[in-house]
Image 1 (cartoon, helix red, strand yellow):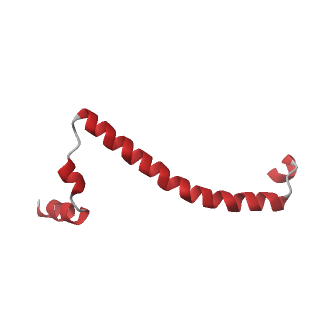
Image 2 (tube, one colour):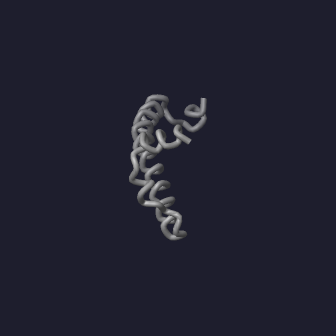
Image 3 (cartoon, helix red, strand yellow):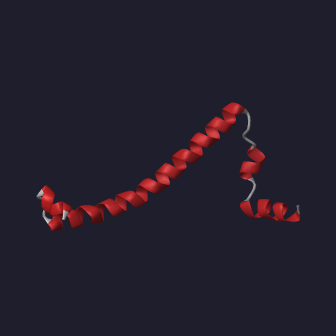
Length: 68
């Protein structure tokens, strides 16, 4: 319905949404990594970043939490 109102053929819209899907799945990891890097930078500036904990494997951290 929106395509008809905008004067865009349905075939063009289908191609656009097909291409946009692949662009979207590459956009998400970039946004997540950007948020992670910004969080690390801010934590370092505030002196709250613990490099030892950051480099510890997740499995080891989970085991330590279960022991507590």
